[in-house]
Image (cartoon, rainbow, N blue to C red):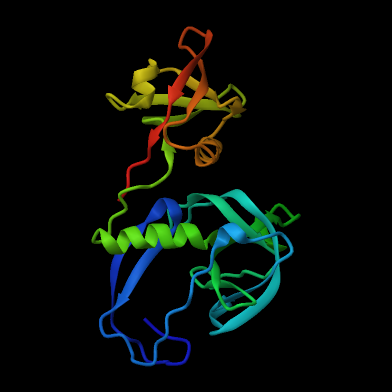
Length: 261
């Protein structure tokens, strides 16, 4: 591991990771005496228009800083999977106009008091216009709020690399995307149900297709993940299903908690 003011790599140990929130904790084997920990602020106090700075190593440019404002709070965003990451759906994300580029992820979003109020994680993407993929959308980046960072990181430290309270809702099912004859996704097919889990208790059966959760349509896995990210364990919500016979029914499900790590 390298520090901004020291090009020499320092030995460190991975304490633990929690992929659903795209967070990890790394511990120096021997912390340098000159190292001063950053102070984490209260992300719940952020307001739209607050001035912030994103610090990181975009495109390998060590110690770069960009400035901007808080554009919005409470966003639910999905980080797409790629070759090195399974992707994640992040609740309560901070949207900022401070430029976030590859290499900024895992850095710091700080306020004018020098408090870390978020951890940059991804930039929004938009179609490139020539059919050749996507490109970063200028002025739209996202950061994990500091209160979530300190919560999950604190659990990883306190419980030997494990998260014991995810604060995330789950249905207790395994699903696959179902498509219509034209190839368009129409819902999430229930492949299996966890015995004794929330879906099982509500009577959801394998072979049924979930088309809405909490009155929000869900056609693909990313949409289901985004809906669940906005809900709380213990909350009771309607789930709309299409049966194998083609009928429609709605059941009330008391959501469980997504397991920790």
